[in-house]
Length: 393
Image 1: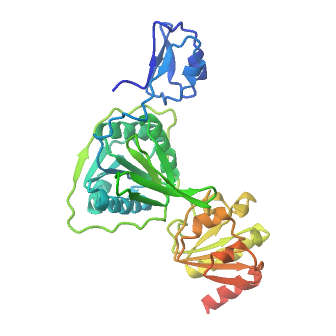
Image 2: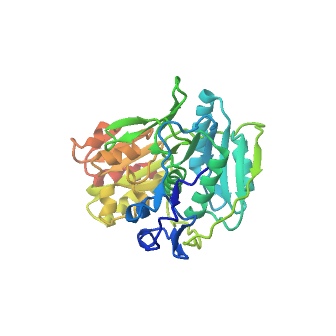
């Protein structure tokens, strides 16, 4: 396949303008001629800078791309500290639903050091073929290395659908991959399905602050790429005696500009927010950061996690890792207790999927009561201590 960006050497005068504008160190001068390397993201900055029309991008047409050779559903199996991320099981569940409509195999990409055990686990959950590359040089996660490898694998294997998690890793990796292979990407999907007529992937996600749901199709490019919002789709369960293949791949590993030295797990007194069955969140109504002690006490009493609204995080009362909402974490606990949270649309987008929502607010007209299953109109400084007392008694 021809490279999407090319340098016409006969026109290049060696002025160096392309080198100056490249943000990725992807252009160098060799014998007074511009040369591209593997860091190129086809951003087009050098094309605009060149006064001699010596750099051209051959865009793939929206019509006419050979999409018939693409088949199957593939997912990216992210992992931390030797274990698959919990979102991976949700993506597998979504992939198995899609397989029932599309009747195509499910594959998975897993990269890193000592990942064979995770590859075998993927097979046990219904993955038909695992594309594994095991090498210490890859590490747990380096977005430069893994974006390069994933793009090469997708171009070679040609799945028609590629899914990843709407996590910090997924939101960093998949856009880079999509840019490299020149396809589209729908982020933070809450629903995936197959169109009955044209067999395209219907990618549904909130839009305009969660006021509407948009369904997006990728008609002419492959693979159709999407990230799945965490804690929205049902996690898959292991299958008895499911058989699949593990294929060991080998690709050159580029030397990254940034070295990941180590992952340091966050120290928290409560359980992980995204995986919690019970969450108690505090908002602006707490009035002072020291009052989060009330939220922590209630969360501890019910064995839950501490959450927060964006207002509380922006005020510096609690770290961002506790933020629930459109710009924070999406959660789906059994019980969600909102204390002193008015219920802005952005916050509701991150927690309205909870099985039971309990709202405590002294403003009876607060929007949070519109989604709450149980509402308590009153001061949280009186209600929360009483709840703790009742639970402990």
